[in-house]
Image (cartoon, rainbow, N blue to C red):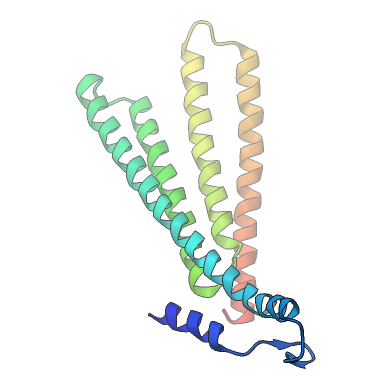
Length: 188
């Protein structure tokens, strides 16, 4: 109801130009252009809110779907193969994806409420994605090391990737720390 009331208030209000009220002697086309320019920010705000709500709905559906897939994969894996490291890492990988989606959903909710974009939630999502990739590379490397055709070149590439991911993790943790300190210093 509040959104409708604000929308009707925008339509009823007399348009003004930056230098004062719109001149009644102005041609109709120019008056219409002035009115449209006055209402444009309201259209953008309304569209932004509805798009954010749509994104939030799809994020919730995606998170629920990913959570369901990880549960099914765990049950089917336990029945067919029993408990092994690959199954656990696969389920943890899916759960970290769910956690990333929930963090992005949290960011969307905050931006809807506060009408501002904050960096820290994106840094947290990046950190979760980095940890997720570290888990996968570690599992792939351990499986390739046990296989007879595992080459030393693949191992070297995996170690380089793990080193880059470790550096990225350190940068993201440092950035989160700095963002929190800055928020505390500014009183937010």
